Image 1 (cartoon, rainbow, N blue to C red):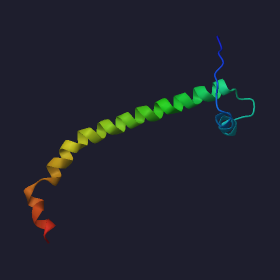
Image 2 (image 1 turned 45 degrees about the vertical axis):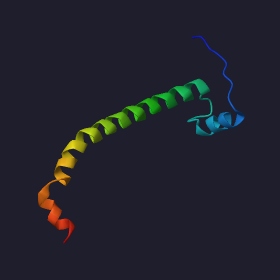
Image 3 (image 1 turned 180 degrees about the horizontal axis):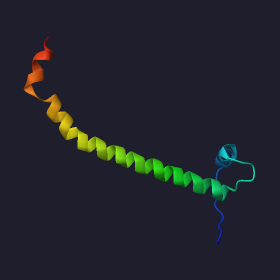
Image 4 (image 1 turned 45 degrees about the horizontal axis):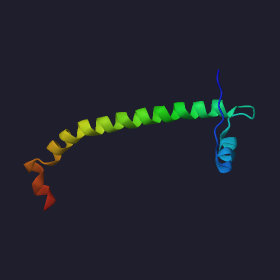
Length: 74
């Protein structure tokens, strides 16, 4: 496996040290795990946005019906 060197702010390195799951966990392992979590969260958010867009039409239909307008002034 090829490796590279990246420059990180010292505060970021300190934050990475704080979130290690175990003391010998490498930064490479930690960052890989963080990327997997991020991808899953992003995928879930896209799914939630998709559901929201699908539901918008039906909710508009339910909210904009004339039968309920009388209740606004009750």
